[in-house]
Image (tube, rainbow, N blue to C red; front, side, top):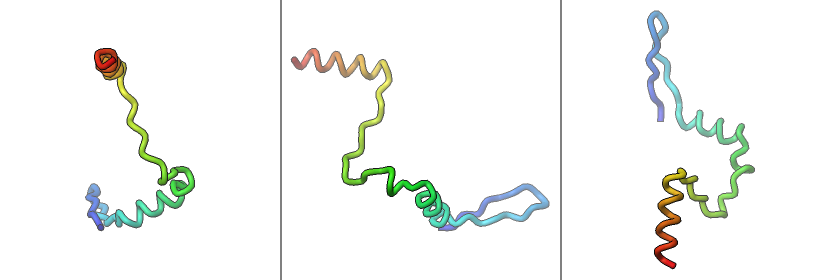
Length: 62
């Protein structure tokens, strides 16, 4: 997919090949080595308020 990036005059608009950009970032960032795709995705961290709510739910369940 290619998107057009508008620039200020007098510079002409440019095109950005998103697939090429993402492939470069993935390869140069060594994400294939850093990430273990065989493992499940870890849950996102919870805020203090969310943690308190989960604790309350767990206490009620026990």
